[in-house]
Length: 107
Image (spheres, rainbow, N blue to C red):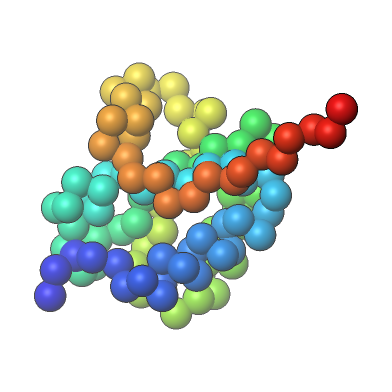
């Protein structure tokens, strides 16, 4: 078996994260994005949203731990990444899982 994440697990993760309207974008990075993952490899996700907080991250993590997804899911707030190498890796190798569409303001 390869290291691909089951589609139903991916859908559940996205459903949990995007239930919060502050999540603007979700990007997969790390070994799964590079195609180097094993079945037990963790799922590394960068979350984008200017109003996201560490408390939001903790709530997401708690809810994800209640699922039947066997892989560990590691979440990081993209705006809080100080490591330029990691930031560059996410932007160049990352796979966008979700982007919230912005509704145009009516004049």
